[in-house]
Length: 283
Image (cartoon, one colour):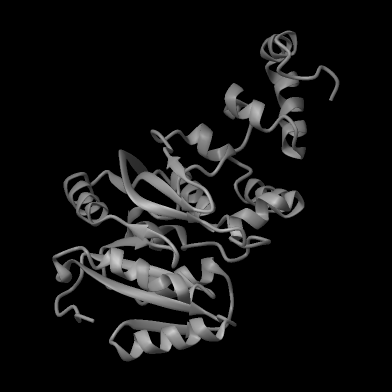
């Protein structure tokens, strides 16, 4: 492992929990960046219980990689630990089973260097693993972000944003929404986002992933959302209703709440959607 002799521009932070069989693929994707002085890699072993993972991380440490070990505290705490040890001006979180394209780092540095008003750069992703496809988040929209998490954690952002927001919130009831909360917090504080309409990283889908489990357990997912709404309740209100988002929430508990808001504050839109068969009148 090449040791960075200069102060890196980007700190690549990798939380790892029982993903030892994937992490070398992740590292190989990062190390395709030719200029080794541009970045540092910080791996945090978040209390892995898998023996293979612990042995693999031990080998990586012996090979010269920076590996920090801590008791299991979840991805928010693991990312915070990595950022605290980072030296770069910019942060690039990469999950230990995902891959990045070298262009992501170069484009992120270029945009952030030349646009001081921008603090977060995010892009499209190729989906692989148990599913295939593309993730195209689209241009930044606060209204959309307040209702769904559409900006992945794998984004290039200024370390000063992490400092100002207090980092990832490890108090969220269950793991998996900490990146969403960080983006919301940053948005409400006035930080600006820029979308690159290019595939710049690859997102692995696993049956046992945190987000997959959350989507299967609606109660936990709703608890996370309720926590974030309560934390930022000064910013949530009927002015953020969007018809497309409304349709997605129609069958959920939050959809019920949103319908109440819609009916009270936007009766014409509510009546229109009912007449189109997109909503049930009785709630």
